Image (tube, rainbow, N blue to C red; front, side, top):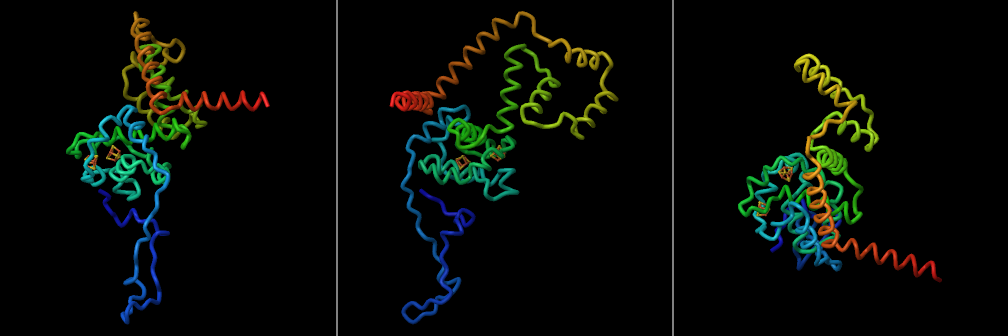
Length: 259
Ligand code: SF4
Ligand code: SF4
């Protein structure tokens, strides 16, 4: 059942007649305001299945639209357009074009998980926001976000070495996202570390810049994790029909070349 919120009414769908009389009654201005009905003709029935196939989206079908997630949401408190309940509704209804209108703010979820604790149905709305942002990227609706780039760099390093090495991760992240390495907050953090950390730890951190630390005997775990990740990625690609799209594009290219 749709829930109407004033903040969700698009301005172009509001109609007000400055001068209107109905059966002798003056209903000019505010009294004649009405909402033009929307006709949605481009349903995507697959969208709920696609998003629920991505990590975090699994329980989206459990939502009963109580709105507790939006009510508790940190980002919603400063931007009313950020509305997890509404996006879950759109996904479950297959209203892809409506969802795409908000594609540039869905990634702004800060993963505070207030929604997760507020949700009475264990939908895990934070996970749904992540899955939706991931879906938007995989489908090419939005470019890869900084958050995704950071996740990839971090995961790659941990999988390869079995270690978390912050310095390398930050340097690679800044390089890939075109940001300068000298950032005021980073300089301040390094100054505090130099002042407060034990000399032994600082020496090990400095050495790690030249010799990448690795967990001994890690290769077995690394191969198993890589195999699992490859399986999961193949599963996600299949669920979103991405392999079919690639095949179609290849066929079109071959057909075009043959003409
Ligand atoms: S995790 Fe994201 S969606 Fe949930 S309350 Fe925090 S900002 Fe809002
Ligand atoms: S709190 Fe849970 S059940 Fe309620 S609208 Fe949000 S996701 Fe749905």
